Image (cartoon, rainbow, N blue to C red; front, side, top):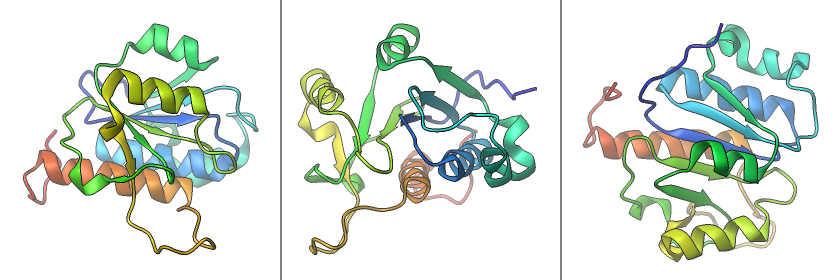
Length: 171
């Protein structure tokens, strides 16, 4: 039985994830931080795969998980009010994002990132300042962070902002 959150801290959205361990780790992060996890298909594995459950440890049954058959199905069901898209192609640092409780944090997949049409939608609907990147070395060999690491960094920066730098998660 999943722990259904009435008012999640954030909505973590994985767009077409390819590695089950990353999805499992993102689920574990969602549980311990009071976030909801959205998985947008197609994905490259079965959600019942052992690797997902193993990465989520004994937390997986607690994940508030919403699976969406496509991006359009996600949009139709969720109708997000505020979205932040993390991308190695963005120019705004995630340190500058004024996040609010309930925001949707979007993450592309491990190989191809986020589809261009989703980048364009976020920029058109919310502005280019809603395309965020993590500070990284300016080196072509350093393309991006691991997906699960990116989720944790984004969520915890948002929590830091919501709690005004405090130590407790504002549940």
